[in-house]
Length: 163
Image (cartoon, rainbow, N blue to C red; front, side):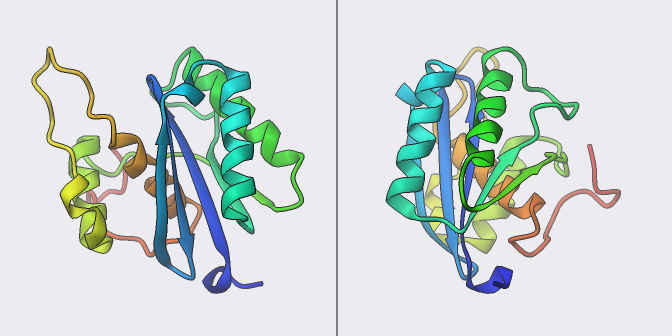
């Protein structure tokens, strides 16, 4: 099966939330978030299994928990859980490294919205230093993982390809 006729589910974890996006034949068809699923590794596993049962993907994309990056603590435990759940499934399980190609996640989200205009109104604005991270930022991180897996066309970012 080629990447162009697959349904792919990418899941991401940020502090206090999980997010998923589903791309079907190159089109973004579903996006969803969960606060409850981010409470523990077992809740994250249950939420991932529920998304898989609901969306029926051919491919699961998760972030490599062992790659260097900014994830710590509960987020790393959840990423390890995602990878473990994916190994037990009869679908292609892609565990990818997240590369930073933008100065920040907000610039990256704006770039992704150019490819997926349905998300344009969801692009978060960077909050003041004392403010909370926008809830929907996790959706854009899931899309980034989809791109890292090679299931979206490359686009935007810094010339040298990494921050």
